Image 1: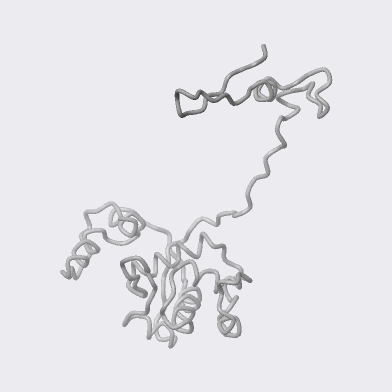
Image 2: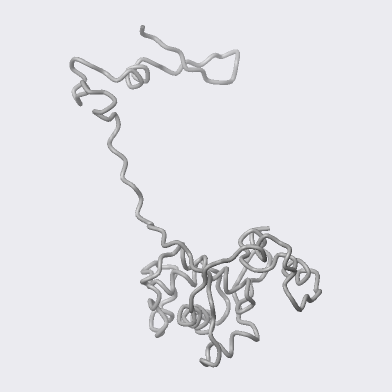
Length: 200
């Protein structure tokens, strides 16, 4: 279902292929066939992705391959893989966008993903020509997503509690005061815990 939802190609063709049936042309009736996706020449990106799959032995999943392409220093990356030329060649592309490109390559048949507990990525018959530079690849243009997380202000915020101070002198935030004025009580007749306020 995940693959079906991420498709940017003909959905009917994908479904028939899943049941070992071939459809020569797109159906021209599904939502993807009736949607115009902006594409670009993604041959270099495709070659990097295919090369990563090939050089790591076609025995790893998406997360490992993307970390490998981005030059991750994680201990999960094999030491021998860090010496390969492909290691780190995709550091200029975010992890989220690499996921989109890999899914696009899978949907177009340049890669295949195994089913089951370990969905490893492997090459297909279409991969060889791209790796040799004999064919180009068009990819769907994805939105460049910023992976940086927005920093939240410390709680409680002075905007919400203008008189808030860390020494709790003149003012205590209501929620914090409520937490400080609670204790855990245990009933011997009932084997469960209940919070009870002890101050007003």
